[in-house]
Length: 365
Length: 107
Image 1 (cartoon, chains in turn purple, cyan):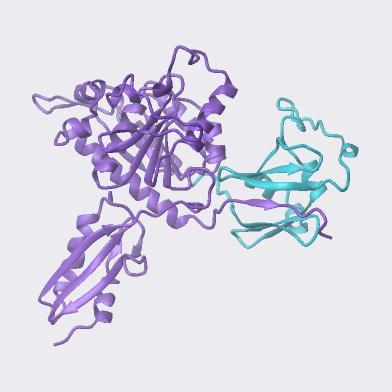
Image 2 (spheres, rainbow over the protein chains, first blue to last red):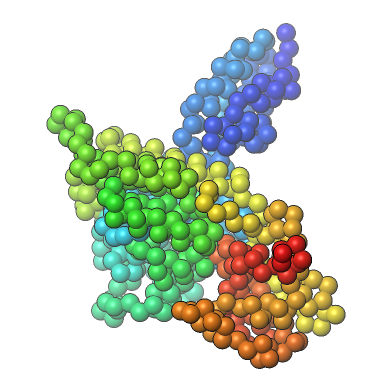
């Protein structure tokens, strides 16, 4: 019995992406179908290499096609094409960056920089092109976490070249520090340096640019959201009530500037004993989960208190790189997938959000 | 997001004369006269930030005031460079929808 392309497509139409809630054929994932003597080959092009349901989708396609009469073997080539924000390519700010993700927290000390560094590296490990911009002018921590203290980027009149470490591009105010760098930052100076970072750093083509925001809801956050079209924000919190109250403020800020909140990450969620594996709830558990339900934003994941996360960061090699097989690294990898999936969802819902630039005609009647 | 739905514009353009037209996601269309928009500027120079009192005297605005250029602000609003030199106001999409001058919205 001979099998034809339409039959394959009809069958693949019954496979639904669990995040995007649409079948993979109308999503345009299925490409280059080739049929030869009962052997079926095609590409499955996902919206991100970090897709958390990659294997599940592949398996489902495989088994469904294999069950068709006349099919003897199936070969699926998994690829990805990261979808960009609506103004990708047209914007004057970061035109070659497909997704700009802001990592924020309502208050300091929740481990936001550690989370950002590990998420960026976890995304890069899936094959995505990733950049990290440390926007914390008050206390930049990326130079330490990537073992680049004292390193300086190439700066020319027009552009700043980011530094490279563990497979990602990095920029931080920490790389530009001289004796002349101010210790106290006035509002307008914060604005100026962040604008320079957004317009002058030569990132090249990126799938994801992660912005490590300074804590709080102030000048820096405002400058960033007004200058760049941020694709989505992730809010990092800890289980304590005070942290949650501030996280809520962060959420409201992004709502005001129309940046979709991709979800919450609860850091320092619990302690899992490395010897016996017993889980201890140091703080009250479930605060972020409750908040995510209340506010209708996803909880992307819970990261345990793990001395190794801190140690590896201090040594310039975050845990995702230093101990990729550890429990904590695996959790980061899962959360990175969740972030990428939420971005894909946000793009699906986005209508037309192309940038406005109108030159007014004053003599028009 | 569940809490408050923001209606986004689909298209923002100059109308046939000195007016700005916004077509919204929900099919609604708003038509703003230039001087109306200028009078509704919410920036700190036009509206007192603490009391909310209007600092702009209506007769300060010339009837022929018009934009020179209009640009996006992030993904939530637009900034207008006015012919009278004013340019500090950000008009958020939410606010623009609120001040839609059509009769249906006014009611």
